[in-house]
Amino acid sequence: MATAGFVSQLRTARWRLARIIPFARPYRKHFFILLATLTLISGLGAVSPIIIGRVVDVLTSRRLGELLFLVSVQLVISLTQGALSYLHGKNSILFSEQLARDIRTTVAENLRHSKIEQIVLRPLGEITNRIDGDVEAVIGAILNVLPTFESAVNVLLMLVIMPFVNWRLSLISLIFVPAWFFLSFSSAPRFSKLREELSRRRDGLDTIITEDLSVGGIVRAKITACYDLAHERLHGQLNKVIEARLALNSISCRLNLSQTALSSIAPAAVLLFGGFLVARGEATVGSLVTFLGLLGRVYGPIAAIAGIQTQVLALGGIFSRIIEFLDITLERHGEMKPRSYDVEIDNVSFGFGERTILSGISVTIAEGERLLIMGPSGCGKTTLSRLIVGLYRPTSGEIRVGGLPLNTLDINDYRRNIGYVSQDHVLFTGTLRENLTYGLGVCPDRQIWDILATCELDSVVQSWPSGLDSIISSQGSALSGGQRQRIALARALLGGPRVLILDEATSSVDPKMESRIVGYILQRFPKATIVVISHRPSNLLSDGSDYTTLDLGSVAEYAYS
Image (cartoon, rainbow, N blue to C red; front, side, top):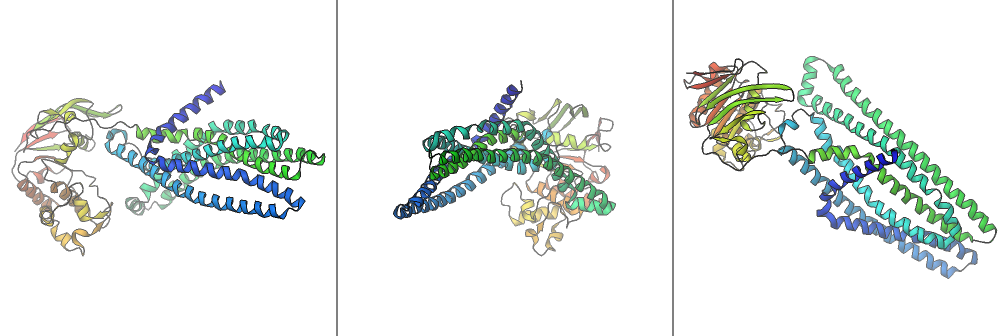
């Protein structure tokens, strides 16, 4: 039963590895160069013990001419191996780095196109560790597979040569081979569990570092004066990582110790029996030296062959974590484009798992009209806005745009016509111009300044030494909350949206400025469908326009004018 389970695990591990291998196809040239150089290095390495053994015999007979020839051959072999090693190293970097790049970019692209429900509850550190640390481990495993080919060639070559040197010593040396495989395979299941546990603990560590050592995390520690708590949080998780590493290292050390013992016992047995043969005149000193040199080139490759199976099996959990993101469910959408941007929310419900957030919501807003979504915190206002954008899909009911179900639309085209300003006001590290024009291509400065004036940011940006080319960070730490919100709003407006969704988009702006900005928006985009989420509706209704109001607190719909 244990053997059957191990074979099943090994097949699963090989299947996981096979899922990654297709990424290597564009770089098969580098792959074959790696194999060729490894094979040549191995073949040349097999010649060295023969030459050294021959040198010993030549020295005893004092044939200096042959000695000079043998030394010259060994020098050429060494120089050739050096050149091949350089070629191997160069192609190893090209192969591994490009392979890692492609896997990481594919995983990142899948995450961007995935259903948001699959990643919204994941810690940021987990995603970071999978793309960085786990991919690094997978690439390391693939690179370690390559020397297995060289090891197999080396072992076969040695098994052919060694009997010609001395067949009796060959039999003694091969007695110890099964022990290598037993030691490696018996350690693999425990290796697998500990490697996966280490990755989980690294997820937690990366999450803590990302959260606690960001600007927001440092500010949180300062404001709450919880330095000790933050220290213990990081220190405790680091200790968990250390414990997992120690447990993994413990098994590795025990395995290495056992294999080292075999590496010592086998040559000792060969040396003892070989010495007996030399003493009886049935072998020369040179042949014994040759055999010991060849033996050193057998046990190392055999250990590599046994170990690679174990490593691939031990990394099974890591492969699974990468494959999970490669197989993540992607958004499905159609190819239709709406003729209008009337938005109909028809008996929509939504929830995560067993938790229901929205239930039976219905409201219709015609193109060019305005919808005000109200309600207490946690009632699902932001969730509803994300449903309209198509980030979430209803668990029941339907959202239609221009009479077409949202899932039949070309979602990318639809979103390009939406200006969505969330309460998170996400920025990224770069210039203000790059943040404003993200996804829009090149925009004329005049157009940018017009939008900045609409958001009452023009005078602020003009006061900066570098103006539009000023650097801002992802945290927007040098900006006020109102400035961050208005930059996010300006970015949404710059695209000329057909639908504008403002989710607490001006909550950090003072009421008078908020009223002016809303007035500018209504004047500049009179035909846009506008959805507003706000706790201060009075400031948004001061222009006298008609709003359809959806109160999620009572799920009541009424006209407000």
